Length: 219
Image (cartoon, rainbow, N blue to C red; front, side):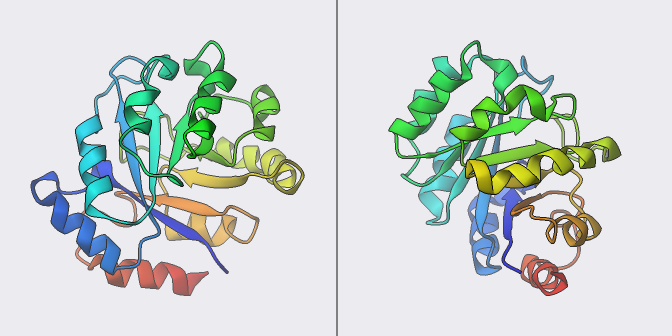
């Protein structure tokens, strides 16, 4: 089964960021997930514009940029200017008055448009946007911090979301508390990719290459 594994770089060792990027590349990670937080939309600060730009310069692998910021339409241009065609940019629909306008900017820049759905956001409220995005990132934890507890009711979102994938032309992704058990359960159901953080990838004794190989063997 062909799945995408994305490294959550907010969990990486920032004292050795270039080495982390190279090690993950050698381990055959599919993309680098970049969490941008403004301290307003979520109660935390995470990676910066410069962190994202450095990782973009250090790898040819795609970047998945997750904007957890208020009114991304006002600042999305700064990120688009430092990314490459084919990189992904996710926004949260609740963070913008007219999210389709921001998504159109992402499309016009030859990036892949995506939306992120919080645990408390229903699929019904974003159905119209599913027609214009290519990726939907379902948060299984409340956004803002790594290492949070999985919210089991989020699984029910996939019962509504996954049947719409073929009709509307998007892929579904998992973000938050991503364990090998969750990958084995939801990949066969149609979840395309998984963001790997402290639950499975970072802060472990096993080398990245060994962990990623074992995940791929599981599915």
